[in-house]
Length: 297
Image 1: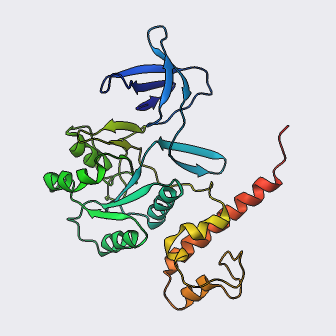
Image 2: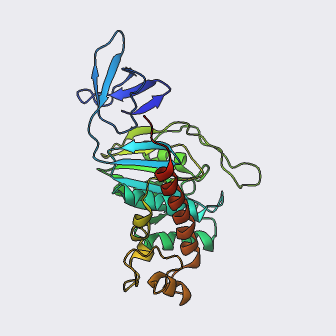
Image 3: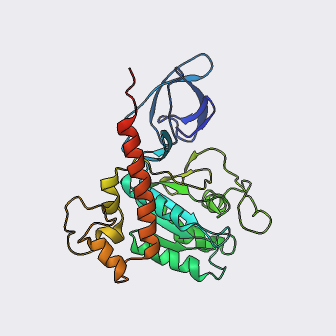
C-alpha cells in the first residue's frame, strides 16, 4: 500500500510494479498504512481491499488511547532536524526511542549544515552516542553531495522520514526521487516550518529500497511503552555500570540507585534524566489509569 486519502487507498500490485491504482476498503474497520501488504480482489471499477497481511515491523506513536500507525514493513527511521526551525531535543529522543522499540535502525540527519549551530552539532553527536547513525547535509546548498551521501544509507532498505515541519524532509525526498514537488518555507521569524506533506506516502527508490514520507508533527507519543521497559530502552541509562540495590528500581528516589549516583557525579546528562523522569511519570500515570478503568462489557 502506497498511501491513504480518506477512505481511498493508492496501491501497487506485485505483478505490476510502478503502476499505481486506486482501491477501496471492504468495511469501515479496514485500516492500512504505507508499506502494508494487502489482499485485494477485483471490484466494480476499482479493486477492493480485503485484509492486511502479516507485518514484519510497525512504526507507530501513541498518545493516551489514540494510536497513530505511521508505516509498516520498514527497516529504518531517518530523523531529520535542523537549526531552523529550532529543534526540540525531546522530539528527537522520542523518535530514537520509538525506532528502537519497533526494532528499527535509526539514522539522524542534521540538515542545513551550512548554518553555524554548536547546539545542532552537539545534538548530532549525542544522537550518535545513543546508537543512531549520523549525517550532516546541506539539502539546498549541495544537492549532489546529499544524494551521494544519503543514497547508500537507503539502498535496499525501507526507511521512514520523520521530523518536525520545516526541517527539509520534502527537499531531501525530492533530491532522492529526482522530482520538484512543492516545499515549504519557514514562517515569519524562521521559528516554525510550514507543513507540505499532509499524508504519509511510500515512494520506491531507483537504487532499490523505499522511503515513506510522513507529515511533520510536533510530538512523538510513546504511551505504548511499559514503565519498567523505559530505562533499559535508553542507552545512556542502560549502560550505567553496576546494579541498583533494588531489582525493580525505577531510578527515581530509591536508595542505592546507580542512575541517581551517575546523575550526581555528572556522568549522566541532567537533561536526559529529566526527559526520562517526565516520560516515566506519564507512563506510570497511564498504567494506573488502565488498571482502574472500568471494564467494558
